[in-house]
Structure formats: structure tokens, C-alpha cells
Length: 220
Ligand SMILES: *Cc1c(COP(=O)(O)O)cnc(C)c1O
Image (cartoon, rainbow, N blue to C red; front, side, top):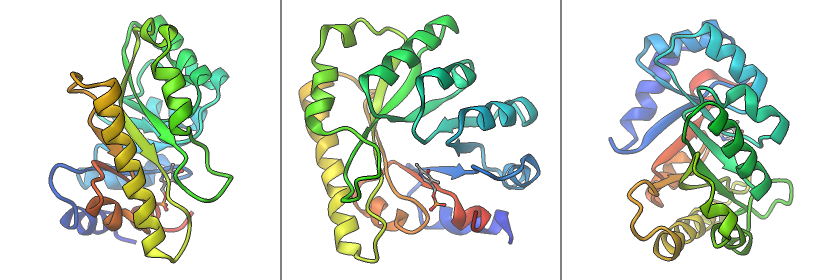
């Protein structure tokens, strides 16, 4: 497994403005260092304590993204350093992030996760739930988070058309929210979609950030 070559191959297929988040969950610091030494600086993890341990041992110029479902009692492990939280799927977790960010005197960029897949197991908001959050007075009082865009996961299926339609749907949600809720916010610009098996489709449909794990590091 040549991790450096895998990263180079993926980057060859990505427009320069699309960010590659190397998903290193379950991988050891030694393996992550192979990607680091190949020039990769943006990594994604989905367990708060695992992320916190890796942050402690690995170089400090790594940009760490939290990409999974986050529990309120785990926010404290990542709030001091995390660069972006992709999986905001409730008002409760957004408020918990704001609180811990405040303790650390930081503003943490967050992505709202939308439920775009047909599978019932994938976390995420509906458009209605997002509006309930964004239109509320309490949301406006949260000073230590900034909503930087949206995130979604497509259905795990061979049907490319279905995957494409789900990504298209997420892009539509993004455009609508931008118009309705963030018309003057330059920072609302990210569409985090696409993984090892579907990142090329995601890029065609407007992804600005792909989260790729097994295509870089091998199977987990
Ligand atoms: C694990 C994971 C990925 C990466 O998946 P691969 O198929 O290995 O590329 C991307 N996004 C999320 C939210 C994940 O949990």
C-alpha cells in the first residue's frame, strides 16, 4: 500500500479548489505519518477520544476535522483544537459545541449534516429541522460557532444515478440555505460530500470537500 501514491492519484482527479480530507479513523499515528510525509495536512476522524490522542502525538500543523456523529459529552475532547466539525445533526450538539468553544475562546466552524440517503441509519437533519435551528433567536446568540456549510452521505449502493441525485439534492439545500439564511456570509461555502467510492460523482455535483479513507489507507 503506497499511501503517498494513493493521495497523489486522488489529487490528480480533484480540481485544485476541492479539499481532500484524509479519513484516518482506526489508523495508527505511524500510518498517518506516511500521509503527512507525502504532504497531506488535513485529516478526518470520527471518534473524539481517538482524535484527541492523535492530536497529542502528531505534528501540530495538521488540520483535524471531526467527521462523524458527535455526542455532547465528548465535545470537550476536541474543542481546543478541532478545525471543523462536519456532523452537526441537532440543535443540542450545536449548543454543546458553542459552549465548549467559548471555554476555549475559539470560534469553531461547523457543517450542518443533512439526511440525503434512503438508509434510515444515517444521521442528519431535514430541511425543516435546519430551519428550526437557523431561524431561532437562540441560534443567533451562539457566538462561538460559525456555520460554514453542509455535509451529507449518499446511500451505499451501486446505483450511480441514485448517488448523483442525492448529492444534487444536498447541493440544492446548500443553495437554498445560502439564499435564505446566509446571503451575506462569505464563510458559508462548503459542501462536504464524497467518499472513496463516490467522490468523483460528488465533485461533478459541486463538492468542495471530499472525505476519503479506504482509497488512501486501505480497508479498515
Ligand atoms: C469513514 C468515513 C468516511 C470515509 O469512508 P471511505 O469509504 O473509507 O472513504 C467519510 N465520511 C464519514 C462520515 C466517515 O465516517
